[in-house]
Amino acid sequence: PRRLRFGGMETALKRFLQSALGEYVSGGLRVDTSKFPLTLSNLKLNERKIQEEMDEEGPVPFELSHGSIGSITVNPGWTGVDIRLTDIALTLSFSATRALQWAMRSGEAQEDVHAEGGGPPASERRRRGPPPDPMPPPPAPPNVAPRYCPAHDCSEKRGKVAPRWLECSSCRKSLQTNYAEFVVCPICSDREHRCMLCGNHAPAAGGAYLPPRADPLLSSVPPPMPPAPSFLPPPTTTIFREGASA
Image (cartoon, rainbow, N blue to C red):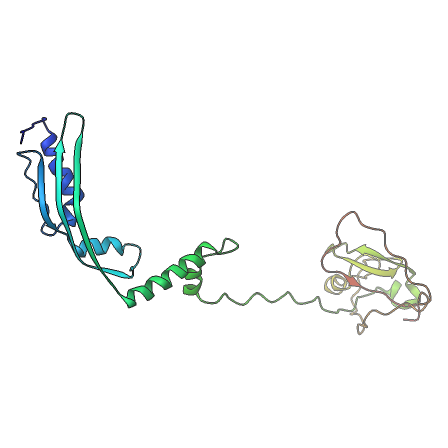
Protein backbone atom coordinates (compact mmCIF):
# COMPACT_ATOMS: atom_id res chain seq x y z
CA PRO A 1 0.00 0.00 0.00
CA ARG A 2 1.09 3.54 -0.71
CA ARG A 3 2.52 5.55 2.14
CA LEU A 4 0.90 8.95 2.26
CA ARG A 5 1.99 11.85 4.35
CA PHE A 6 0.02 15.02 4.28
CA GLY A 7 1.71 17.14 6.92
CA GLY A 8 -0.42 17.06 10.08
CA MET A 9 -3.21 14.85 8.58
CA GLU A 10 -1.89 11.69 10.24
CA THR A 11 -2.02 13.22 13.70
CA ALA A 12 -5.43 14.79 13.04
CA LEU A 13 -6.87 11.47 11.81
CA LYS A 14 -5.55 9.60 14.84
CA ARG A 15 -7.06 12.09 17.27
CA PHE A 16 -10.35 12.16 15.39
CA LEU A 17 -10.78 8.37 15.35
CA GLN A 18 -9.88 8.06 19.01
CA SER A 19 -12.28 10.82 20.09
CA ALA A 20 -15.17 9.70 17.86
CA LEU A 21 -14.91 5.92 18.26
CA GLY A 22 -12.38 5.20 20.99
CA GLU A 23 -14.77 5.15 23.97
CA TYR A 24 -17.21 2.86 22.12
CA VAL A 25 -14.57 0.16 21.47
CA SER A 26 -13.66 -2.20 24.29
CA GLY A 27 -10.10 -1.49 25.44
CA GLY A 28 -9.92 1.71 23.39
CA LEU A 29 -8.93 2.27 19.78
CA ARG A 30 -5.26 1.72 18.85
CA VAL A 31 -4.53 3.57 15.64
CA ASP A 32 -1.30 3.23 13.68
CA THR A 33 -1.14 6.00 11.09
CA SER A 34 2.23 5.00 9.71
CA LYS A 35 0.64 3.36 6.69
CA PHE A 36 -2.54 3.81 4.67
CA PRO A 37 -5.12 2.63 3.94
CA LEU A 38 -5.56 1.97 7.64
CA THR A 39 -7.61 -1.11 8.55
CA LEU A 40 -8.82 -2.07 12.02
CA SER A 41 -10.45 -5.50 12.23
CA ASN A 42 -12.59 -7.50 14.66
CA LEU A 43 -13.33 -4.76 17.15
CA LYS A 44 -15.44 -5.57 20.22
CA LEU A 45 -17.78 -2.81 21.28
CA ASN A 46 -17.97 -1.36 24.78
CA GLU A 47 -21.50 -2.52 25.67
CA ARG A 48 -21.63 -0.55 28.93
CA LYS A 49 -20.82 2.78 27.25
CA ILE A 50 -23.30 2.22 24.43
CA GLN A 51 -26.01 1.22 26.93
CA GLU A 52 -25.42 4.47 28.81
CA GLU A 53 -25.94 6.39 25.57
CA MET A 54 -29.13 4.45 24.86
CA ASP A 55 -30.45 5.18 28.37
CA GLU A 56 -29.49 8.85 28.35
CA GLU A 57 -33.15 10.00 28.47
CA GLY A 58 -34.38 7.05 30.52
CA PRO A 59 -34.18 3.26 30.34
CA VAL A 60 -35.14 1.70 27.00
CA PRO A 61 -36.76 -1.78 26.80
CA PHE A 62 -33.57 -3.41 25.46
CA GLU A 63 -30.14 -4.17 26.89
CA LEU A 64 -27.05 -4.50 24.70
CA SER A 65 -25.44 -7.85 25.53
CA HIS A 66 -22.89 -7.98 22.73
CA GLY A 67 -21.61 -5.77 19.90
CA SER A 68 -18.82 -5.87 17.36
CA ILE A 69 -17.46 -4.13 14.24
CA GLY A 70 -15.97 -6.32 11.50
CA SER A 71 -13.60 -3.66 10.19
CA ILE A 72 -12.88 0.06 10.02
CA THR A 73 -11.08 1.24 6.91
CA VAL A 74 -9.52 4.71 6.68
CA ASN A 75 -8.25 5.87 3.31
CA PRO A 76 -7.10 9.51 3.03
CA GLY A 77 -6.77 11.26 -0.31
CA TRP A 78 -5.97 14.68 -1.72
CA THR A 79 -9.55 15.89 -1.46
CA GLY A 80 -10.69 14.18 1.78
CA VAL A 81 -10.79 11.04 3.87
CA ASP A 82 -12.91 7.94 3.24
CA ILE A 83 -13.90 6.05 6.43
CA ARG A 84 -15.95 2.87 6.21
CA LEU A 85 -17.33 0.62 8.94
CA THR A 86 -18.46 -2.88 7.93
CA ASP A 87 -20.16 -5.84 9.59
CA ILE A 88 -21.59 -4.00 12.59
CA ALA A 89 -23.42 -6.50 14.82
CA LEU A 90 -25.52 -5.75 17.90
CA THR A 91 -27.24 -8.29 20.15
CA LEU A 92 -30.09 -6.87 22.19
CA SER A 93 -32.03 -8.61 24.96
CA PHE A 94 -35.57 -7.58 25.92
CA SER A 95 -36.23 -6.54 29.55
CA ALA A 96 -39.81 -6.53 30.83
CA THR A 97 -38.87 -4.28 33.76
CA ARG A 98 -37.25 -1.75 31.45
CA ALA A 99 -40.21 -1.92 29.09
CA LEU A 100 -42.59 -1.01 31.94
CA GLN A 101 -40.40 1.92 32.99
CA TRP A 102 -40.15 3.08 29.37
CA ALA A 103 -43.94 2.90 28.88
CA MET A 104 -44.59 4.93 32.05
CA ARG A 105 -42.05 7.56 31.01
CA SER A 106 -43.54 7.76 27.51
CA GLY A 107 -47.04 8.26 28.96
CA GLU A 108 -45.80 11.10 31.17
CA ALA A 109 -44.10 12.71 28.18
CA GLN A 110 -47.37 12.63 26.22
CA GLU A 111 -49.22 14.22 29.16
CA ASP A 112 -46.55 16.92 29.38
CA VAL A 113 -46.90 17.69 25.66
CA HIS A 114 -50.69 17.98 25.90
CA ALA A 115 -50.73 19.97 29.15
CA GLU A 116 -53.42 22.63 28.81
CA GLY A 117 -53.49 26.25 29.91
CA GLY A 118 -49.73 26.64 29.97
CA GLY A 119 -49.56 24.97 33.41
CA PRO A 120 -46.73 22.74 34.68
CA PRO A 121 -46.26 19.25 33.14
CA ALA A 122 -48.21 16.33 34.59
CA SER A 123 -45.10 14.86 36.22
CA GLU A 124 -44.46 18.17 37.99
CA ARG A 125 -48.11 18.42 39.08
CA ARG A 126 -47.92 14.94 40.60
CA ARG A 127 -44.73 15.87 42.43
CA ARG A 128 -46.29 19.01 43.88
CA GLY A 129 -49.47 17.23 45.01
CA PRO A 130 -53.05 18.52 44.85
CA PRO A 131 -53.52 22.27 44.52
CA PRO A 132 -54.46 24.21 47.66
CA ASP A 133 -58.10 24.96 48.38
CA PRO A 134 -59.29 28.19 46.79
CA MET A 135 -59.64 31.24 48.97
CA PRO A 136 -63.16 31.63 50.39
CA PRO A 137 -65.19 34.55 49.05
CA PRO A 138 -65.07 37.75 51.08
CA PRO A 139 -67.83 38.01 53.73
CA ALA A 140 -70.92 40.01 52.87
CA PRO A 141 -71.07 43.50 54.35
CA PRO A 142 -72.73 43.52 57.79
CA ASN A 143 -76.30 44.73 58.23
CA VAL A 144 -75.66 47.93 60.17
CA ALA A 145 -78.43 50.35 61.16
CA PRO A 146 -77.70 53.93 60.02
CA ARG A 147 -77.48 56.87 62.40
CA TYR A 148 -79.69 59.96 62.26
CA CYS A 149 -79.22 63.45 63.65
CA PRO A 150 -82.01 65.19 65.64
CA ALA A 151 -83.29 66.74 62.40
CA HIS A 152 -83.99 63.25 60.99
CA ASP A 153 -84.59 61.14 64.09
CA CYS A 154 -88.03 59.90 63.01
CA SER A 155 -89.61 58.69 59.79
CA GLU A 156 -91.82 61.78 59.43
CA LYS A 157 -88.71 64.00 59.21
CA ARG A 158 -87.22 61.94 56.38
CA GLY A 159 -88.49 62.90 52.95
CA LYS A 160 -89.28 60.07 50.52
CA VAL A 161 -89.00 59.96 46.73
CA ALA A 162 -88.98 57.29 44.05
CA PRO A 163 -86.18 54.77 44.59
CA ARG A 164 -82.92 55.67 42.84
CA TRP A 165 -79.24 54.75 42.90
CA LEU A 166 -76.91 57.06 44.83
CA GLU A 167 -73.24 56.97 45.78
CA CYS A 168 -71.88 57.09 49.32
CA SER A 169 -69.70 60.20 49.68
CA SER A 170 -67.29 58.27 51.95
CA CYS A 171 -66.72 54.78 50.54
CA ARG A 172 -68.06 55.52 47.02
CA LYS A 173 -70.24 52.43 46.96
CA SER A 174 -73.64 52.72 45.28
CA LEU A 175 -76.93 51.72 46.84
CA GLN A 176 -80.62 52.16 46.11
CA THR A 177 -82.70 54.30 48.46
CA ASN A 178 -86.03 56.17 48.46
CA TYR A 179 -84.83 58.94 50.82
CA ALA A 180 -84.90 62.45 49.35
CA GLU A 181 -81.61 63.24 51.12
CA PHE A 182 -78.60 60.94 51.22
CA VAL A 183 -74.92 61.49 52.07
CA VAL A 184 -73.34 58.29 53.43
CA CYS A 185 -74.27 54.62 53.44
CA PRO A 186 -75.41 52.88 56.67
CA ILE A 187 -71.99 51.31 57.30
CA CYS A 188 -70.12 54.63 56.95
CA SER A 189 -72.85 56.41 58.92
CA ASP A 190 -72.34 54.10 61.90
CA ARG A 191 -68.55 54.04 61.62
CA GLU A 192 -68.17 57.83 61.31
CA HIS A 193 -71.05 58.76 63.67
CA ARG A 194 -72.73 60.80 60.93
CA CYS A 195 -76.33 61.18 59.89
CA MET A 196 -76.99 59.07 56.80
CA LEU A 197 -79.19 61.80 55.24
CA CYS A 198 -77.34 65.07 55.90
CA GLY A 199 -73.92 63.94 57.17
CA ASN A 200 -74.14 65.90 60.44
CA HIS A 201 -72.86 64.50 63.73
CA ALA A 202 -75.06 61.69 65.05
CA PRO A 203 -73.73 60.30 68.37
CA ALA A 204 -76.64 57.94 69.02
CA ALA A 205 -76.43 54.51 67.40
CA GLY A 206 -79.22 53.44 65.08
CA GLY A 207 -81.97 51.05 66.11
CA ALA A 208 -82.30 47.42 65.10
CA TYR A 209 -81.81 46.93 61.37
CA LEU A 210 -84.80 45.66 59.40
CA PRO A 211 -84.34 43.97 56.02
CA PRO A 212 -85.43 46.08 53.03
CA ARG A 213 -89.16 45.91 52.30
CA ALA A 214 -91.44 47.47 49.71
CA ASP A 215 -92.67 51.00 50.43
CA PRO A 216 -96.46 50.70 51.08
CA LEU A 217 -96.96 53.98 49.24
CA LEU A 218 -95.39 52.45 46.13
CA SER A 219 -96.54 48.87 46.50
CA SER A 220 -99.31 49.25 43.91
CA VAL A 221 -96.97 50.71 41.29
CA PRO A 222 -93.61 49.10 40.55
CA PRO A 223 -90.72 51.51 41.13
CA PRO A 224 -89.30 52.97 37.90
CA MET A 225 -86.07 51.48 36.55
CA PRO A 226 -83.03 53.70 37.11
CA PRO A 227 -81.50 55.19 33.95
CA ALA A 228 -78.92 52.97 32.29
CA PRO A 229 -75.49 54.02 33.59
CA SER A 230 -72.62 54.61 31.20
CA PHE A 231 -70.49 52.31 33.33
CA LEU A 232 -71.01 48.96 35.03
CA PRO A 233 -72.38 49.31 38.59
CA PRO A 234 -70.05 48.30 41.44
CA PRO A 235 -69.94 44.56 42.17
CA THR A 236 -71.44 45.03 45.66
CA THR A 237 -74.62 47.05 46.08
CA THR A 238 -76.95 47.55 49.01
CA ILE A 239 -80.64 48.33 48.85
CA PHE A 240 -81.81 50.53 51.67
CA ARG A 241 -85.45 51.63 51.56
CA GLU A 242 -87.74 52.87 54.30
CA GLY A 243 -91.53 52.87 54.08
CA ALA A 244 -93.57 55.94 54.93
CA SER A 245 -94.94 54.20 58.03
CA ALA A 246 -91.44 53.22 59.35
